[in-house]
Image 1 (cartoon, rainbow, N blue to C red):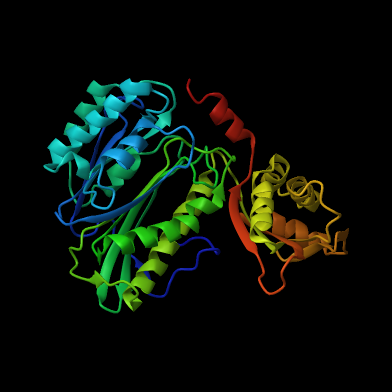
Image 2: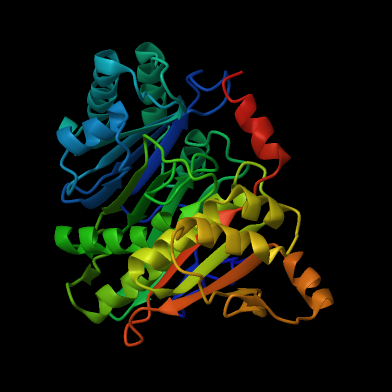
Length: 415
């Protein structure tokens, strides 16, 4: 089965699935340090062997930043990272100065284990907020993970960053560029506390292509905005979000700025991150279905606000869960986002079946609508009056449904 499993993310013609394993120049390993629970991998180490490794990173925009985010952002060469050390089971967020010291200790321990300077190490954590991370356990886990480093270690590394994830989220792809074939691999985690801006998620991407720092930063930034910035499970913004792209250059294929290689590489990275983002939404802590809402019209700010209102509406999300094509809930969400406005000539469709035109219900095939709403991927379209017909605003958000399992998981999260 192809990695590109969603109809919303077509597989680029120049991209194909590769055998499991990291691109040339990378190794990974994991260990069970009893941070999450005994016997389960919860510390991961990812190492680039190329001294000239180029990287780029994006972080959460939360007002409460976890210690590992602060350490990576402020104490690391974000454009030249060679190592990622990560743990699950504890977010090391809202832990004050002791938490900062643990995160700095993780950075130093990983640097020593990999034989690099500390400022070439990124730190990432995920799990429970407000609990001190056991420095002794995580240090022991780093040492064990270092002894297990190998090119096929991406599978173990992916397991080590999972929390409430129901399944691992990873990929390994071959990308055919005009200058040669390169490999891209990625490992991600996320299932809850997910909201555009951009989710309780970690995502690490590796490639053996050679990119300049500005190119890597540009491509990662654009692709994050089209992927992890476009998803929501529960409208909750995390303290720990981190996305990192690392480029070893070990393939010998150089992706020059403003070249056809850059265009094709960017298309592959964009498709990769969008599919990973959809996997996070599909996981959704008990989700059965995922939705895509596309709002067209108004100005860009208005379209964005309406799309997020629909995606985060409990009424819309529970209707999605129950395969109930109740378009009135969509109208309610848009109206709440634009409260105080004059009555809107609103258009609404579910799976291409128009249910509302110019603010009023229209006749439709109820049997076809019920069948369409029972699918796994459901598309909602909303049309707003255009403020500028020459510039049609459009915004999309991918979102999960909301069911009983989400409540069960989060009601018992720390127990």
